[in-house]
Image 1 (cartoon, helix red, strand yellow):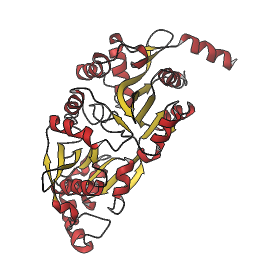
Image 2: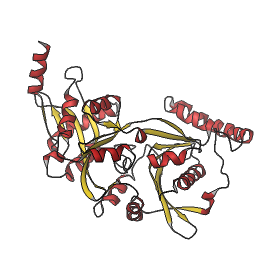
Image 3: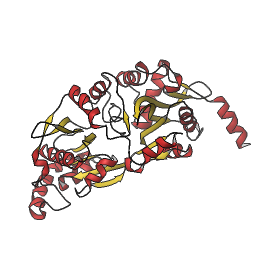
Length: 380
């Protein structure tokens, strides 16, 4: 009997492409399930859903976002789809970033989310991926023979001021603890003198190869022009159309929950740019990186420059998502690695999958959802 009811429920439910008429329902789902608030979605959030998932969507239904409908026609789930043109060795491929994924009524219809995801993964694209999977969606992806990329699913953290970091981390749960910030600064000074630069607790700039390199702010247009040239080392890498990457960087300007934006180039004394990074944070904050990239073999230098800049700005720590190339370079730099949102891929192409599993892909951050306002911004 239970199987009969399940079959009837599946027959009554429906997955279709996301349309303008769904904006209110989808934005409200996002507010309630991901932002954890009962406040209805405002015009800013609805407008952003339209801009990201409708205004620039491809015409082919298989490459568009989807909604799941209840039997009465109301929306009970959504999966946002962002097509990404990529190059794999000597051929062009199409990937779908399946980031914003929400499903309601799990007690009533526990398979609604799976039907949404299955509908997207059954399309003709070469690759489907997400960099923001939580535990529930990870299990859904795995049930459809997707692969979790462990080396892309680690978060890294470098503590710069330990006492201030502890206070700042605690304020995420108890805002009143912000009054303790001045005491953190005092304790950090004591710890620095007592423990010295070799300690895992704290950060103190020491002479090294990074001193031969300078960092400076860089515009969106220059960042967009330089980044593709630093990605030729990757067998799988994005191919951005004219103006596309610059437009994405303009979206990334607004991440008010993360603090001030810092977008910088790393160059040697001769003026050659060997790395780029984009991170956020105000003095006293835990900084967050969106992207770190360098010329092959110079990752360690670029990370040293990032830590130097973060410390000079007064950040208490800095964190980010991993890439296999920077994990190796972070060994010995007193970084902690912890499980983060999972990066998961789905493809029927064995050669493509092996390249992904061996860390030959440039994904996460600007090839994912990290550049959007959905991560790190407020909608007001």
